[in-house]
Length: 290
Image (cartoon, rainbow, N blue to C red; front, side, top):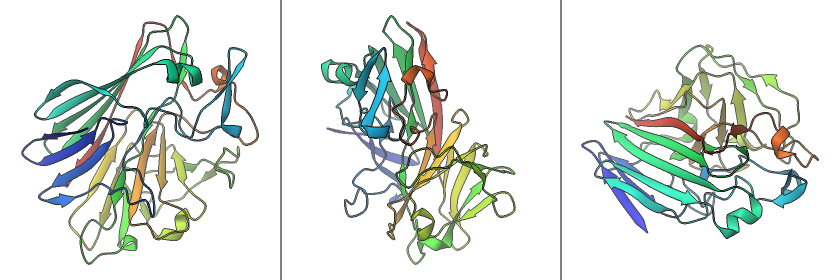
């Protein structure tokens, strides 16, 4: 089922499946990727309780092995609407038999979308209803149309970070696992990354130590998208590899994929969030449309 919220500036459409954004409109213009399966059938999935791939699709916890698909399971299940107002909506997912078989925790995941002028504030809340410490990663994966305006091309666009940045690129193997080899990634004027399709021929580019806000824009156009992620230490950039896909994913993450050829022990993976029993985690990031 789909739901709509709006204010004087923005109109959103959202699905109860995965609590996923389906549309972002401003002044009659669509900004969100349309899910064309030729390139990528999703639009803005929520990544939980893991970001990225597991070696062999498996992880270890409490002396057992569990299997989990890339980016976790939160994107595939229906959510209930916990609250809806004209300019906000909160979706809720609770553990059930299927989730417990692959992730042995009792939890509540809430995702709130709230409109504030030209900004979409996206808040994740995770409550640990288990008697043990809960380990998880979480993140966003929104795709934005590029170009944003007619008459422009993908390579007319660039990303501009909000402040001087000297990011480090997280090293990945060809199979998209951590390689352990990270390298500086110089930006033009320490702020700008110009886009071209071949930059994604080896899959995603993942940064750390970057500014906590970035804007997708063009010197030839007026429309832009700003993503801010003050409490997300990693940023993924991606479109379907070895294509001329007309979109860009700007992905704020709290954690990283597994290492190559290592079935990870969940509780020892240092980048995961650790949430004590009966405690709540909260994180908000924003999309601003101009």
